[in-house]
Amino acid sequence: MDNLEAGKETGSVAGANADLAAVLAAGRRSRGRRWRGRLILLVLLILAAAAATYFYMGRSRAEFSYTTQPVKRGDLTVLVTATGSVQPTQQVDISSELSGTMRDVNVDYNSTVKAGDVLAVLDTNKLEADVKSSRAKLNSAKANVVKANADLQSAATSLDRLKSLVKSNVSTQQSLDDATYKYDSAVAAKDINEADVLASEANLQLAEVNLGKAKIVSPIDGVILTRSVDPGATVAASLSAPVLFTIAGDLKKMELQVDVDEADVGQIAVGQKASFTVDAYPDRTFPAVIEQIRFASEVVNNVVTYKAVLSVDNADLLLRPGMTATSDITVEAVKDTLMVPNAALRYAPPQTEARGGRGIFSLFRPPRPSRSGGADSTLSGTQRRVWVLRNGHPAPVVIQVGSSDGQFTQVTSGEITEKDAVITDAAARTN
Image (cartoon, rainbow, N blue to C red; front, side, top):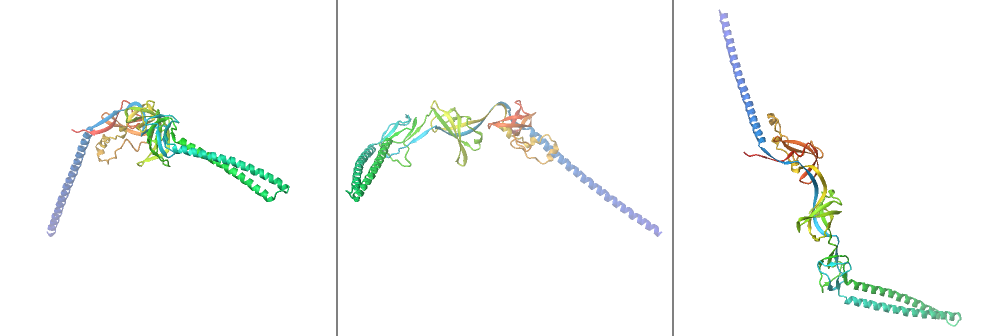
């Protein structure tokens, strides 16, 4: 009886444990279902946000407006621009080698002169007196030579006579020695006086040269550009003598001196053609040809330049010395070539547009750096990427480029034609 009751009690405990285990298992299943529901809800929210973002970006792509320019064919001219001034081919500063008072001035500004024409004359009173004095000294020296010759002849005669007397024992040796001394002295006096004649002749020649220098003459044919002296002015000759006149050579042939930047000097060469303008005639261009490129550099405001000299025909005398000029040197001329605007080489589409059409999962990828200026690490040498508008969307085209004039660049090869329009800019539309 006791055993029967004990069995019943054991069965009751086992049943209770089973019920408790069932309750606990049911609780765990309920919590698992709740977590799965929350996870599914979170995934749905993420997908909804991604879809909304994708939809918004798709709308953004559709709202870009593009600025395009047509690919064109034509002539391309590569220019190097440089500034400088118009100068005479020959220019001479005239000064005086002598000091004195200016007596006459025979020319004025713009006077046309020939080589040898007298421009001005210094007062010659002192110079003429110097010539007369030098001539008188020369005449005196010549007279002294005549006297010295006579003295020499007399001394020679006396010496010969005494030599005969000494041989005949009529005269003494002392008398012969004295005669010999007088003869030698006469020879020396003759040489001295002849040297004085040479010195006097040189002094006279110098005085005459100085008298000739009182006349200031033109060394070249040309035009008087400046005159800085008037009659009566005192001229002081020194190592830094003042310039009295500036004469320019034939103004029908001028030269243009321009400063070429060191970055451009490698592109220019002797014989290249150029055109230039001056402020006096802004609507007119003048032709020129490079005649010289100087090796010496010039540094102005820390900018290194090289002087190029261009020959200019000035037959109509419109150009004047010192005029400021801006020149365009033609370094290359390409005929009938395909060209794209330089703005197309610098353009890169917005990043959202460039990534368009790759699906919603592209939103979860890390962003790529956008291209700049049409450059790309995958391109080499003269390859460039431009973007052509096709079906309302930008499409990349790789081209090979050549020369550029700063606005357009030559296309030497690539899948692009005159029918294409390249994108140069893009802007978002506003609703």
